[in-house]
Image (tube, rainbow, N blue to C red; front, side, top):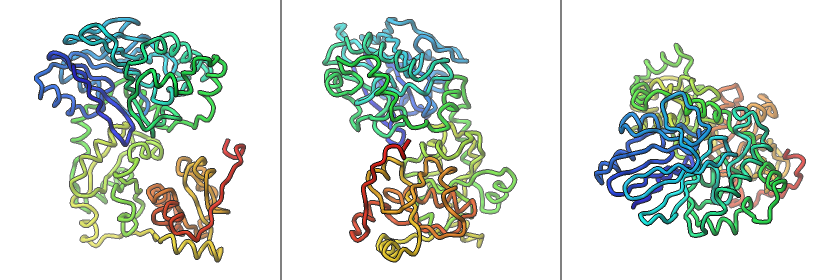
Length: 471
């Protein structure tokens, strides 16, 4: 028997390939299905089932394409009602493949169809739990995402999750390995560990939500406290996972159209497409197409796209480092942005060589900011999350989180100069580029963000403790 976790860092997502005696299953596959097909082909295995733990909100699953390619049925747990053909398993149902089996454990609470799969080896011993978003390492799935679909409050969903954990998961043996769908960095929970697997016994001892002496009321309070609003694209991804979507091949064919500078500009003007520049932040700052938005591919790319581009059907034109265009199209499609309509052939250098208009954003080192702070010659804008700002920040800096940019921009004036920083320089460039496109021309980026500011040494920072302000 072989268990392989296929972890995608930018989504903090774990998919699973399990194989036994020539047959395999795939759990919670990503949109691009080639890795699963290649693994099966390499070992001469047949993919027998495509298993989903629930309708995912933070990414578009590859269940439809993988089922179409392999003929393997798509399996959901009880209460799922997809618009496509699928096997809706019953609680306790046994799915056999090779010499092993998976037991279906219906564990509603995160969503009402949420289901875990308990793996039993050749001897019938329970060895692993594929827990989806029901149980994470250090946390459990947030109970606020499915309120509308379930016609329940987050408190009612939390109560349901409490019952699921204690009736289905906590009675299992301590030596079982837990394989969750997400790790630290995912918005599907609030306290996930950076570890991506653990023993169930250790989780019983360390996970706050699995305390044996915890009352249901205590659980509900702890699980629902401190939840941030989910990204706007979450319900849109749920709809795609439930109703269906274009094949990945079609999405790639649509997006990977090489456009000359003239054709690129014409496409932007004719379609109203958003120009998304995925190069490194400091490369972007030195020159970019006017009104384009910087979201670097080498960062939290997909989640930030989802948080900041409200319409997943928005036409998108790409500026990318040469050779990375397909990667960009693929990573956009992972979160449902299927309408990339082309990319700038030969990259930004081709745009410059064609003598077309360019724009820039001034970016300075932290030592320059030190003089600004000392002389109080301009205002400082900190675009980190509220919680990051609360931990430590420059005195009198304006907290304008990128997460809520439409509200944050209202704190600034187009007539003033601001020095903008985040933690490391990635988010501040996104913020500056979006506001630049909206007519804010006096934003100066701070290279290296708060990390560089602290390393610089002469800029004072202060703790900020005022919980009521963070609500």
